[in-house]
Image 1 (tube, one colour):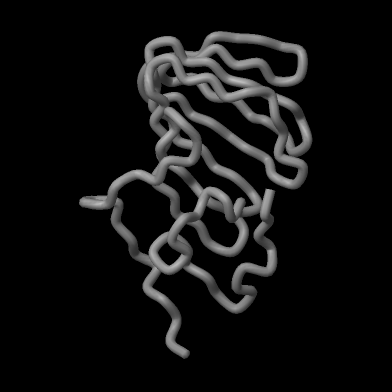
Image 2 (tube, one colour):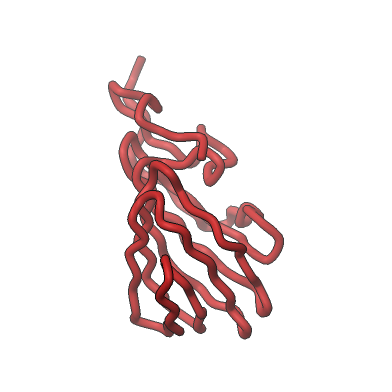
Length: 131
Protein backbone atom coordinates (compact mmCIF):
# COMPACT_ATOMS: atom_id res chain seq x y z
CA UNK A 1 0.00 0.00 0.00
CA UNK A 2 1.46 3.42 -0.91
CA UNK A 3 2.29 5.83 1.88
CA UNK A 4 -0.38 8.52 2.25
CA UNK A 5 0.59 12.04 1.29
CA UNK A 6 1.98 13.99 4.25
CA UNK A 7 0.34 17.18 2.95
CA UNK A 8 -3.12 18.34 4.00
CA UNK A 9 -5.12 21.59 3.97
CA UNK A 10 -7.82 23.08 6.15
CA UNK A 11 -8.75 25.53 3.38
CA UNK A 12 -12.42 25.10 2.57
CA UNK A 13 -12.91 22.55 5.38
CA UNK A 14 -15.47 23.38 8.08
CA UNK A 15 -14.34 23.05 11.66
CA UNK A 16 -15.55 20.06 13.66
CA UNK A 17 -17.70 20.92 16.69
CA UNK A 18 -16.00 19.11 19.55
CA UNK A 19 -18.25 20.54 22.29
CA UNK A 20 -20.83 23.36 22.30
CA UNK A 21 -18.89 26.55 21.55
CA UNK A 22 -15.68 24.66 20.67
CA UNK A 23 -14.79 24.09 17.01
CA UNK A 24 -11.52 22.61 15.71
CA UNK A 25 -9.41 21.74 12.74
CA UNK A 26 -7.16 18.76 13.51
CA UNK A 27 -4.19 17.01 11.93
CA UNK A 28 -2.21 14.17 13.42
CA UNK A 29 0.31 11.47 12.81
CA UNK A 30 1.21 8.40 14.81
CA UNK A 31 2.38 10.18 17.96
CA UNK A 32 1.21 13.80 18.01
CA UNK A 33 -1.58 16.00 16.74
CA UNK A 34 -2.18 19.72 16.45
CA UNK A 35 -5.51 21.48 16.46
CA UNK A 36 -6.51 25.02 15.51
CA UNK A 37 -9.30 25.72 17.98
CA UNK A 38 -11.92 28.48 18.25
CA UNK A 39 -13.99 29.14 21.37
CA UNK A 40 -17.14 31.20 20.96
CA UNK A 41 -17.71 34.02 23.47
CA UNK A 42 -18.91 32.64 26.81
CA UNK A 43 -17.50 29.15 26.27
CA UNK A 44 -16.78 27.17 29.41
CA UNK A 45 -15.06 23.79 29.43
CA UNK A 46 -15.67 22.00 32.73
CA UNK A 47 -12.88 20.58 34.87
CA UNK A 48 -11.45 17.46 33.24
CA UNK A 49 -8.19 15.68 32.56
CA UNK A 50 -6.59 13.70 29.77
CA UNK A 51 -5.34 10.56 31.56
CA UNK A 52 -2.85 9.65 28.85
CA UNK A 53 -2.26 12.86 26.87
CA UNK A 54 -0.13 15.93 27.40
CA UNK A 55 -1.55 19.18 25.99
CA UNK A 56 0.35 22.33 25.00
CA UNK A 57 -1.69 25.42 24.11
CA UNK A 58 -0.60 28.67 22.38
CA UNK A 59 -3.18 31.45 22.54
CA UNK A 60 -3.22 33.36 19.24
CA UNK A 61 -6.27 35.63 19.67
CA UNK A 62 -8.61 36.61 22.50
CA UNK A 63 -8.21 35.45 26.06
CA UNK A 64 -9.09 32.64 28.42
CA UNK A 65 -9.13 32.15 32.17
CA UNK A 66 -7.67 28.74 32.78
CA UNK A 67 -7.16 26.67 35.89
CA UNK A 68 -4.52 23.94 35.77
CA UNK A 69 -4.44 21.91 38.97
CA UNK A 70 -4.95 24.58 41.64
CA UNK A 71 -3.40 27.53 39.74
CA UNK A 72 -5.58 29.98 37.79
CA UNK A 73 -4.39 32.54 35.25
CA UNK A 74 -5.88 34.65 32.47
CA UNK A 75 -3.95 34.11 29.24
CA UNK A 76 -3.94 36.30 26.14
CA UNK A 77 -2.41 36.26 22.68
CA UNK A 78 1.18 35.02 22.67
CA UNK A 79 0.93 33.17 25.97
CA UNK A 80 1.29 29.42 26.34
CA UNK A 81 0.38 26.72 28.84
CA UNK A 82 1.43 23.10 29.31
CA UNK A 83 -1.03 20.65 30.84
CA UNK A 84 0.74 17.41 31.73
CA UNK A 85 -1.21 14.17 31.36
CA UNK A 86 -3.67 13.40 34.14
CA UNK A 87 -3.75 17.00 35.48
CA UNK A 88 -7.24 18.42 35.91
CA UNK A 89 -7.92 21.70 34.14
CA UNK A 90 -10.82 23.96 33.17
CA UNK A 91 -11.27 26.95 30.86
CA UNK A 92 -13.56 29.94 30.43
CA UNK A 93 -13.40 32.50 27.62
CA UNK A 94 -15.72 35.45 28.12
CA UNK A 95 -15.03 37.08 24.75
CA UNK A 96 -13.97 34.04 22.74
CA UNK A 97 -10.50 32.98 21.65
CA UNK A 98 -8.41 31.12 19.12
CA UNK A 99 -5.51 28.85 20.02
CA UNK A 100 -3.27 26.17 18.61
CA UNK A 101 -2.80 23.04 20.69
CA UNK A 102 -0.57 20.01 20.44
CA UNK A 103 -1.67 16.74 22.01
CA UNK A 104 0.31 13.57 22.46
CA UNK A 105 -0.73 10.87 22.02
CA UNK A 106 -3.39 11.57 19.41
CA UNK A 107 -6.85 11.64 20.99
CA UNK A 108 -9.31 9.93 18.64
CA UNK A 109 -12.27 12.07 19.80
CA UNK A 110 -10.49 15.09 18.27
CA UNK A 111 -10.36 13.40 14.83
CA UNK A 112 -13.76 13.29 13.13
CA UNK A 113 -12.41 12.23 9.71
CA UNK A 114 -9.39 9.94 10.11
CA UNK A 115 -8.85 9.66 6.36
CA UNK A 116 -8.50 13.44 5.97
CA UNK A 117 -6.95 14.28 9.36
CA UNK A 118 -4.41 11.53 10.02
CA UNK A 119 -1.17 10.72 8.26
CA UNK A 120 -0.16 7.28 9.48
CA UNK A 121 3.03 5.33 8.93
CA UNK A 122 4.03 1.78 9.86
CA UNK A 123 2.61 1.99 13.42
CA UNK A 124 -0.79 3.16 12.22
CA UNK A 125 -2.97 4.32 15.09
CA UNK A 126 -1.51 1.87 17.64
CA UNK A 127 -0.32 4.74 19.87
CA UNK A 128 -3.59 6.72 19.76
CA UNK A 129 -6.00 6.94 22.69
CA UNK A 130 -9.78 7.10 23.02
CA UNK A 131 -9.76 9.57 25.94
